[in-house]
Length: 327
Length: 160
Image (cartoon, rainbow over all chains, first blue to last red; front, side):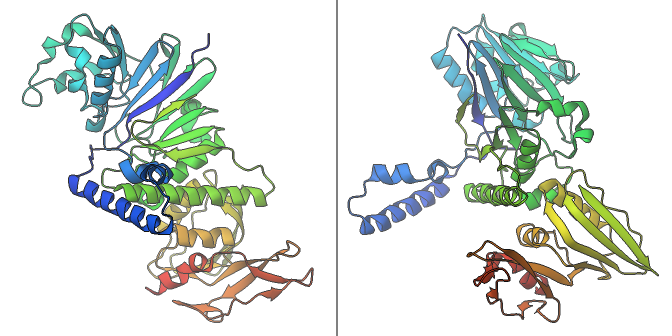
């Protein structure tokens, strides 16, 4: 039986966890209820349920505040990418749904805080009989993880969990396997070395390209790293900034929706999901960046139509925390 | 693909760009320490996001502070970026002329009208009335093929 691959996004925020505040939530509820009241005056048969179903999903819950964490599943194989604050929810989920799982596989793209801070809260690390396999390309992988479990940053010393943790240092652009999942690290454009991942199983592929400025624009500049993207079924891409912010913030290591659209169209990618939303951006600002990307996409589609080229088939959206994409 | 033609007249430089500005485009290094630079954009068909990045970085290296750089015959692909992207038209760069697209809903004919600085628009003001024009291929009329309050926004922005 074929195992379909899926991607679940447990954290989509960049740089710093950004929970919605009680006041923001209250204001949002007030806006939504006022809108419901207004529409009820026009249509007395409108029910609360029908009204809520018609609202775009981000109007109520926003995009999410936890930082980078993704889960790739193919059959019984599972790989976790990055240990941002979203990892805590994934940890709870795993303990609830698969308490007897013995082996866990966790890949680090790099060690900036937003990709690391969830690790001390990954409960399986503290349970006897479990093994946590940690993978990265970086030479200082073990040193970086050990540094987390040290006073005064965290009360539990690394020695408490040491027997359950196995480190695997990877070679750049050389595949490793987790069951039927094949994973290959490729370099991204970020101020500190950062390695994205191409995941392949049963003829499907995912390109994980987050924390990526995409400052190497051309295929020639990308060199061997262009293999990360080519003909991927799904690309998870960095859209921390609006387009003009990304063009101003040179060497900040992040990108925007329009850059991802062009990359996806050029490399034959079928679907793009944009994450790593700026912690300084409200949900309205992220929505505005998504609308800006939509305008750009329509502009490209019109230009192609005028030139007699086929319209782009790419599907894309700015992703929310908790979304699952089945390939 | 982008084709670049450079003509020098004394210390002045005239550059004509033709085709597509994208990540593979090589925008030329220009050294005009005393002269003026005029850039003809009539035949730019399209510019993608990575091309916008190239464009902005290219303009940064030109002598913008002295107001010696001007854009001529800007195609709709370029004008649309003026309103979408902050920084695409930096202060110090003057727009001498630009095209406005028209479309005939009767026969599908497309046309362009060139608007010139001083005659048809000035900083902060559109002088020309953008009425429908007679269609040259049928008895219908050509209508503006852009959203006016988006397309012309750069004229107001240049005044502020």
